[in-house]
Length: 92
Image: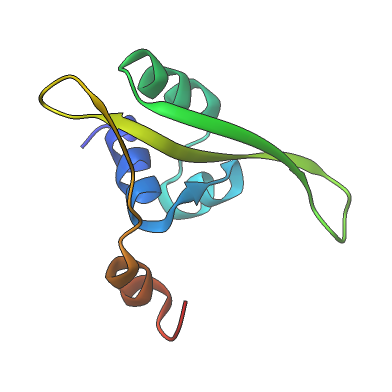
């Protein structure tokens, strides 16, 4: 599985990803480059700049908004609640 595929699977399961999560979970150090690859492949991914509440460090959080269907149309992405529960355990 490529890094871009790994990131896409993560976003589809959990809704979004940050550079820290990409590195911690998958040892991916160039998340922005892989997001660009996904955008060039036709995925509509939005970037939200956030600020860490304790350190004040700014970081990006990437969210998949729409993806292409086999028919070539765009459809909204639905987050897999069961996958989230399996990973985090407990309630969402």
